[in-house]
Image (cartoon, rainbow, N blue to C red; front, side):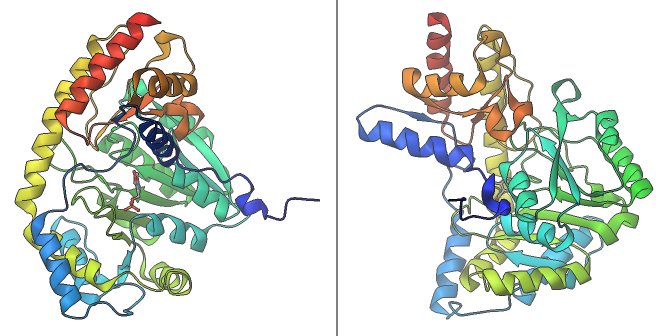
Length: 389
Ligand code: PLP
């Protein structure tokens, strides 16, 4: 009998982080000690003003159905902040969803279909490829280049553009590399997009987690591209709100109306108390964000230095997000096998670069959104493992 499923889901793959976390927990249940560096989740609790606002909102009755695109006050607040940053935005362009993921999946479903080609970073966040497949469009990976601080090779990007190219996905700061696309590359990408007329979706969920720059360069600085630009952002990473499920995307109003309908018929709406908590995150937590960014910077510096002291490991200093993406190709072990051996033999849970696409071969991904003690022990355990092999 033929498989009962559609082509749309035939190749859909799980996220490596969830797979490795489940395996690590199994090993823990058998009594093994595991250092968790696999999942991209802040180890800080959600900041107190956010929790207070969420609890208050539950007491006030924000527990019911609400508008599918989100409450007006939150949409307006986000539009106001964007406009103040120099990117004029109307509330009608902002769509709220449960996490940043709906801001990836639904706009792609609304603009792409079979026959359309979508370019996306390789290595890149796995939901990009899955969303493209869900839309029955053709995924076209574009390699990220370590020597370019993990930005694209722009010539390789241009070579992949055809008359069917519908959309280019950008992610800066990036998961899994921590790389930031420099303004000069964004300018070149903008001019390529002008020439060929494709959409751009820029996933900026790590926009506030930057360590050396004052402001993140954004493709949104090219205002003339607004009518085919989608900016995705969210609350999960910056405000330690992964489980609250809150994110947003900014897009042309006509697309926002379609995405609202897709939300209406799938998710319905985003929890009201979560949205009220999100409003407090935007209003009241700048000091907390500054503190955690400083902490991530300290961890980054120490962890990357530690990695680079190990034989066979070369790690570029990531500019943002909270991931280290060391090149381990000199160890001579395929990344999948290496990540698995590290889990089983050294008690280190990390991801193979290949969990993010073929371009990740030769790399591992570690999340440093975890305590300093775990990070230090990880370096020691890695060193011991490398001296044994
Ligand atoms: N985009 C990127 C690049 C991510 O790394 C993640 C989560 O890991 C997301 C989007 C999804 O975020 P959320 O949990 O808010 O849906």
